[in-house]
Length: 143
Image 1 (tube, helix red, strand yellow):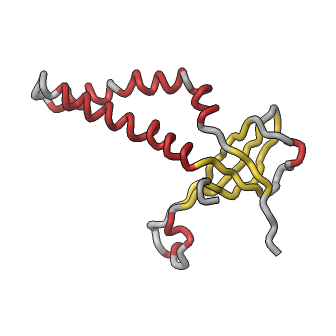
Image 2: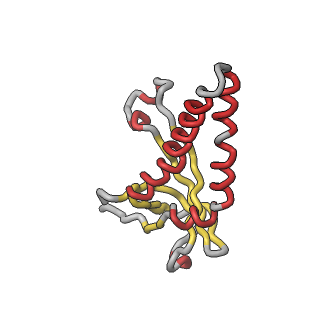
Image 3: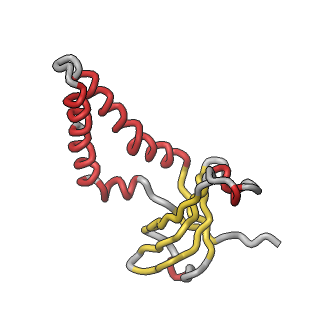
């Protein structure tokens, strides 16, 4: 399991070749014993859609399952979501500074440079959805 990202979740809905799973995404300190008294700990509920599930009839609503993906997929998602937009933004602001000394204009140019990038992501959402896919596994019971 060292090469996988694993989250425990509960099946919310099954249908049309898709299983919707609710997972609880927690920060590192959320498992701390004093996290209930500390405002730093954070947890969020996320809904994950899992497509192309083999043996979809072996799963049932309310069942506890494991949602997995590879570390490689997780790293690629971080690059697409954070690294590439950051590089585009900084590069645009840097080059626009050569043409103007007005910081509001440089900032606006940087922000506007994100429009084509996110438009391309939106157009390619189905292809990206296939590339950044999740798997589902039955949770093993430990006795």
